[in-house]
Image: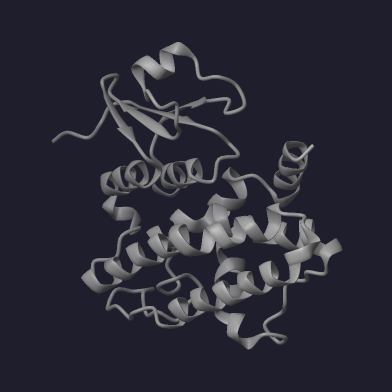
Amino acid sequence: MAPPQKLVLYTNRFCPYCARAVLAMAETKQPHETIEIDLKAPRPDWYLKEINSYGQVPAVKVDDKDIILESLIVAEYVADLHPEAGLFPMDPLQRAQSRYLIQHWGARTNPVQQKAFISLDASDASKRHQDYITELEKVDTLLRNAPKGSEPGLDGKGPYFLGSRFTFADLALASFLTRVPLVEHFQKDLGFKFPTKEENPNLARFIEWQDAVVKRESVVKHLPSKEELIEVYEKSTK
């Protein structure tokens, strides 16, 4: 099948799921048009009728006809268009473990992270904070146990998930990693301080990974900064 002649990405700058599609476009250097969708307003009728009847983002229109929905599927499609970008490892085990890390974060880590920084209830703050650190320690274990591959940059030693090469799991979770500092910002008055790797060696690999991903050029260039995120979340709680 011939490559697409035109891609239109419907996205929102502050949506962490849209970031997957945005980063896939950036990492593969895929030409595309971007249309920003305001998530604070009702979706336009044209969007509901022509793009996604549920009003969700991201979405991609391919050659003015086909529509691709759901963040991971959109990002995978773009990555598949550009195998030369190396976002998917060739090793089946590494691919499987990449999918599991993404699934684990969505099902287990993200709910704990959301609960940790959104709630300002002081009565259970200590438990929320400890639950968050405990969950990140489990992610740390997954990172330490990343399978080694034979491709260059995929020896499992970091700083990214599979090695020194930025791959799909890093891309898919980057926007959530940029939100890690928000927990300390919003919970500092309730006594939360994110530990250093010296204070908690069980987070050393996670801290290395998070630091590498958030400093990735595509992440810095295309995703909101910490200051922008804080401003948005502060406005949303008023």
